[in-house]
Amino acid sequence: MEQKKLLMVAGPVEIEQEISDIGSEPQEYMRTEEYSKKWTRIFENLKYIFKTKYSVVCYASSGTGAMEAAVTNFLSVNDKIIYINSGSFGKRWGYICKKHNLETIEILVNFGESVNILDVEKVLENNLNTKAVFATLNETSCGSLHDIAGIGNILKKYPNILFIVDCISGLCSDEFLMDGWGVDIAVSASQKALALPPGLSFMAVNNKALKFAEKSNLRNFYFDIYEYIENQKRNQTPFTPATGIVNQLDYRLQKIKDEGLENFQARYRANTKYLRHQLSKLGFNTFAKNPANCVTGIWTDTYNADEIVKIMRSKYNIELAPSGGKLKEKLFRIGNYGNINKLEIDEFLNSLILTIKEINNNGNKN
Image (cartoon, rainbow, N blue to C red; front, top):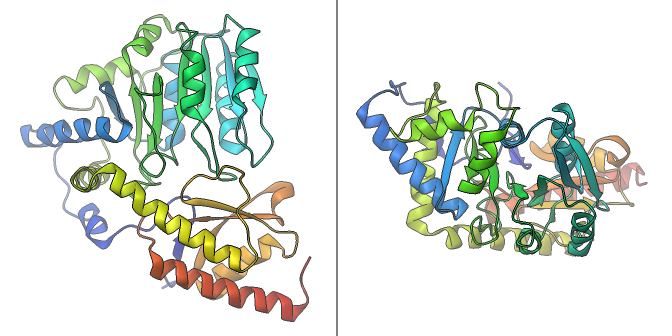
């Protein structure tokens, strides 16, 4: 049997044993009064982590499923949208919108940087018939954090435009205030800061967005927001949920609620700060100019980033997140989501030191 690897990536992530055990409990039937009580608690606690008073629905899908639902439920063919592209996941908004025949305007941001609020304002001023603006809280491909509150403040002047945010890798690790920041639709998933297995996604939707949904001609069957809103009235989902992960979600959300979201986030911040400080002492500096929590991109001109990733995996059983294409040999990413604490970070750092020594001894520096 292959030895377990330490997951220091942006998902899936390390999960506490007590939560893993819940996922292996016997299956249960979901159309019962007891299960509805569970959903009652989950729906309320999801509102707590999104910081919203509005409905949050749960899909049995990856985060990309919720991203597509955020497009198909609220827009129509040929609608004009603006999306902010600062990496792979900002770009994904554009791919989804183009797939559904929307007119797309891209705000391209230099990789590793955060969007300039003035650029957003200028594009909006020149495209007053825009139906939606798509943004990303944390661009996982480089670790940059965007000023969602600032964009939301600009959009107050445009009440007929939807503000849609991907906070898949940022929810619960970085601050996110859906209602306070004027976000109309927000999507996230289970396998990042919530430290659960992949398989659940979430979409928080306010009343303004639901009015858009009434006119959408893209709405499909499985992701139809009205089916999920209607079923929430009986504290159920319209289709079979991923029951094992739902039980884990219930436990996780209640743990966060009991601890307090701010305290939960503070622990992530402390671990990220420690990791980056120790990396800087080894000569590895954080790539993003305004970095998000829990995703640390490292750009290296000295070493082959792909070789670092491969050695760490094969010799030290530690998974790091590689980059693709032209970035493959320049950028690797380190995640400290989930059950990663100082002990695991030190294990990673010690293994990185040995990896660098091996590369130096082999004369394989760039």
